Length: 270
Ligand code: MF3
Ligand code: CO
Image 1 (cartoon, rainbow, N blue to C red):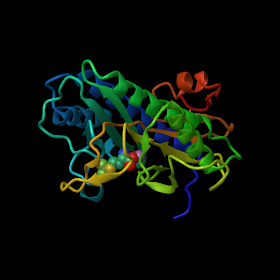
Image 2 (tube, rainbow, N blue to C red; image 1 turned 90 degrees about the vertical axis):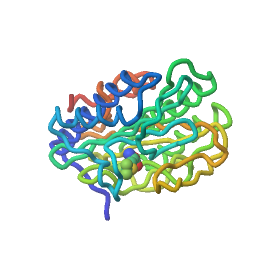
Image 3 (cartoon, rainbow, N blue to C red; image 1 turned 180 degrees about the horizontal axis):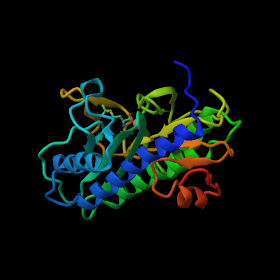
Image 4 (tube, protein in one colour; image 1 turned 90 degrees about the horizontal axis):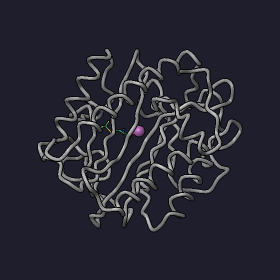
C-alpha cells in the first residue's frame, strides 16, 4: 500500500485520538504504584476509552487480547497485562492506542516504579531523548532515514545500548500500522521524501544489553534474550500544511520537547 497523505481535517481527527491516548497514559502512570497490576492499568485505559467515546486500536489486532501493552523489565514491547503486582524498581513500558471516527493514535512511555536503578533511568532517558530527536529531524523535503539517523546517533552517543532491529516505527492514519516502516537506525538521506500530510509513529526500543529478542510462548511478549532491561517510547506526529510538525499524541503537541531542540510546532492544530 502507498503512503497515506492526510488532509488537515483528517489530522484534526487524529489529534482527537492522540489526546485520548495521551490522557490515558497519564492516568495509568499516576496509578502505577507498587502492588498495582498491569491488568488494573488496562482497566483504567479501557474506562478512559469509554469516557471519551473512543475505540481501542490494539484489542483484536491480529488477535491481541487487551487494550494496552504492558512490558516489565526485560520484556521490551507487546507484553500482555497480567495479575503480577508491580514491584519497587520495575521498569514499566505502557503502549496504548485509540481510534476516533476511524483515525488512530499510538503512543508509549516507560517509567520506573518507586526507586529505580540510575542505569535504568538513563536507559529510559536515552530512549525518550532519541524519540524527540527523531521527530525533530523530520523536515518537509528531507528523507525518512533522517529520522532513523537522528535516533541512532543520539542513542549511540549515550552509551552501550542495544537498538531493536526487528521492530520500528510506522505510518499511522486510518489503520494503526501503515507504510512506511521507520527504522530506528541508519544513515540519513534515504527512503521516501518527507511531505506535508505525512503522519508517523516514532518508537525507539532499546535495551541495556543485547538487541536480540525473542517472542514468548504467549505469541506476543518480546523479551531481550540476555534478560537486560529495555525501554520504549512512542509518539505519533504529522507534518502540517505550514511545513511544521505537530505531535498528535502529546498533550502539548510537542511544544516543550521540540522547542528545547529548536523546533517550532505548527499552530494549525491545538
Ligand atoms: N503500539 C504497537 C506498535 O506501535 C502495537 C501494539 S501491538 C498490538 O506497533 F497488538 F497490541 F496492537
Ligand atoms: Co506504534
